[in-house]
Image 1 (spheres, rainbow, N blue to C red):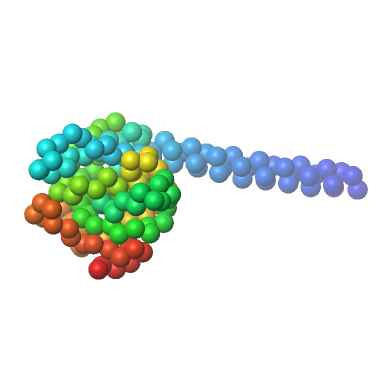
Image 2 (image 1 turned 60 degrees about the vertical axis):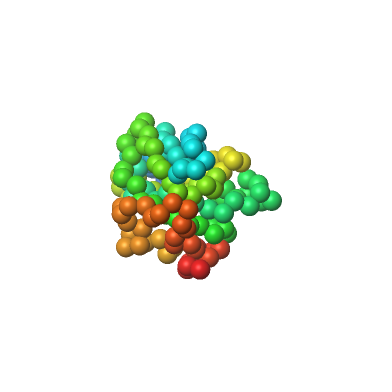
Length: 176
């Protein structure tokens, strides 16, 4: 009788150990190929376009990158860096892939200091980085406005400076 119990407990411990090891190796594998994009505003002429440096500080290439600008709400502070898109987003630009440990400089016609970077890794897993003067926060998953599709946000030239385009409603599910 005791032998059956010990055998059952040993099998149960083995299954739990296997599940934990599998989950740990999966998350380690993902972090080994995970890109992490950060945005930094560069000094620029107040009359000209805003210059932003986007650097990949992660280990893998970032692909399918969308850079968007948001309306900053000083009263919300760092809460505005959360996952939910409860602010108006506008002026999205699609960027070329950025390799690990590389940076690109982007000229953007808008003057906001709330930036959203939505991107994928080489295998298609999504990530979002939100940056403001309150800091930077990385989220697993793509949290850009749902209406910013590849058909709308393409690699075409940026619009005329100081002209907002593709302004979303507060939930990011439509345009205003």
